[in-house]
Length: 139
Image (tube, rainbow, N blue to C red):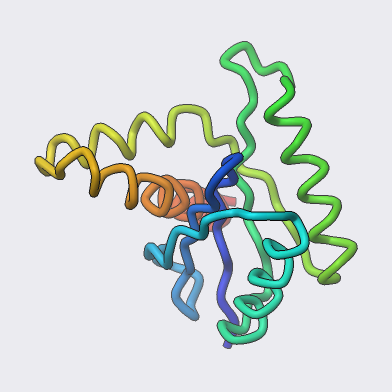
């Protein structure tokens, strides 16, 4: 059985979440501190192999008006790189407000500022991946 990898892509960190093998539930995996594109790709290659990843879902940060800004353009380029490098299906999922939602969840759970910073990106990846999984079931 395979898993789906959800990624909240940031300039400094990648928030990572994995589906279960039935592609029903998303769980946080980790937060990866980025250093270079080559290091990022090496890390993701190992993760794809070790976790038997069959698909990747990237949070797609389109603007509130639906337009594609610089951040979203960078995600499109990252998507193309992943598809070419790993020969894997990469999907985009509208991530508007997921980081804000993750922050609200952590605040309501009374998680301290330092810890919030560490887990926010992984929680945002969970929200992206869970939204994607639920949208697949709805179709």
